[in-house]
Image 1: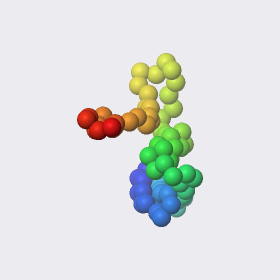
Image 2: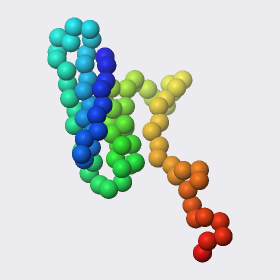
Image 3: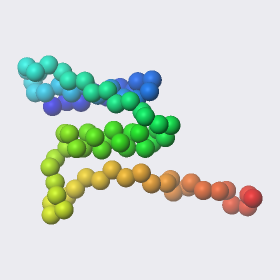
Image 4: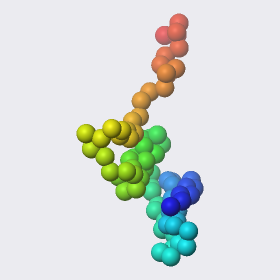
Length: 82
């Protein structure tokens, strides 16, 4: 399975090709950004991909995949400014 992702004007287009012979044909998923926060929208897209195409895991699995949004380590007011 191979993935190709392209940025669209208001979201992302993901093309999925199954196997060598691609007998099913490529599948395209369009993910439209629903709100102004680009980071949250992309995280939602990754969560969707994890749910649909990621490995099946549980709380008891040795490893799990988490998609979190957190502030940048340098984010915040500049020291000395009011």
